[in-house]
Image 1 (cartoon, helix red, strand yellow):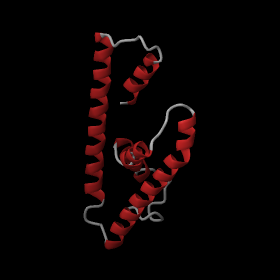
Image 2 (spheres, rainbow, N blue to C red; image 1 turned 45 degrees about the vertical axis):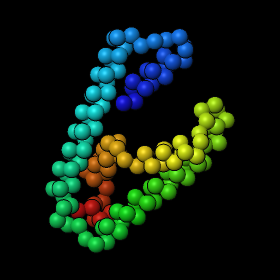
Image 3 (cartoon, rainbow, N blue to C red; image 1 turned 135 degrees about the vertical axis):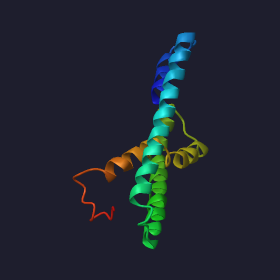
Length: 133
């Protein structure tokens, strides 16, 4: 999903550019490939979670899960608030409504799931220390 956006941003610097049929097809291809990759990551994460954790969830795990989610939410909001003046002064602009959408929308998606999956399968992470089963 990022590559077509970068391509369009690069080409839109010159305001008289219009998308040709080939550009449209390339954009559609990359969007479809991104959709399939996201779907595959969600399927893999679902299989790993069901294999490892479905029968080993304890009450404190729910507390940890919601605390971590809330903490990530707050930290993401603070980072966006901290960098919003820079965005305003560089010409991008950022309203509080856009910041709210960025805070809410950034906490889900295939990238965060893929990173979590990598942490769960990394050999150098002490599984017992972090409570990973």
